[in-house]
Image: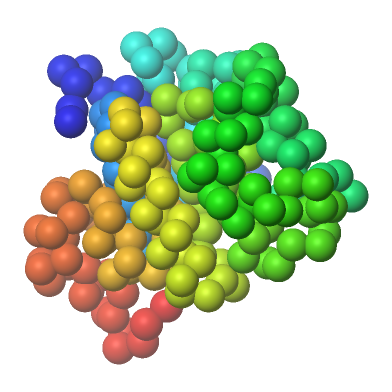
Amino acid sequence: MNATSPLLEVEGLHVAYGKAEVVHGVDFRVHSGEFVVLLGRNGAGKSTILHALSGLIPKRGGRVRFGGHDISGATPREIVRAGLVQVLEGHRVFGTLTVEDNLAIGTYASDRRADATQFERMYTLFPELAERRRLPASKLSGGQQQILAVAQGVIASPKLLILDEPSSGLAPLVVDRILSVAADLCRSGMAVLLVEQLVEKALQHAHRCCLIETGRVVAEGAADEIRRGEVLERVYLGDHTAS
């Protein structure tokens, strides 16, 4: 599964909002074909880490290498063109455009224009979109819109697909579909980096896990080891409340 060199290398990442630093020297790696999940309570800094990797917010310090190249100062467009694509939280689709037009938009930033073969691959992966391809995205359910958002990321054929809270507000069956497709994509060679609050579902599919607490990596290892370890319970249940 793992190549000799990581696809994504994050070293000493610091991120701040104004004077308040919220990510403090984070280090982790993702290899090609690997499914890695970042877990932690709300406010731990997980989504901030993802946005910094995608160039959506500035970094205060540290280095990000992707495919052997330093992308620390790259623009979001340059990062997408390098093969790192993030699916943002919250069903970010264009409601007035058809499902198929939304899929086509997913390839624009990467300069890989969609063709009939790519569309049919998306409809095979996500059959619920095939029968609705001519409908405006606004006519889809919340779950279908999230699936469309994921498909927008996948159709760009990224080397690394970043998913930020894909389960937000969705039925369990829809979440299972999205995570199952993500796992299938890993088996075909794509890497997946996931932020998710549904801990058990995420760990069922992930190869490795990084636990984030107050902007720091406090544990990293195989998903099965993290599931059985005490640190997972401490991070989530330290004050006896789940988050």
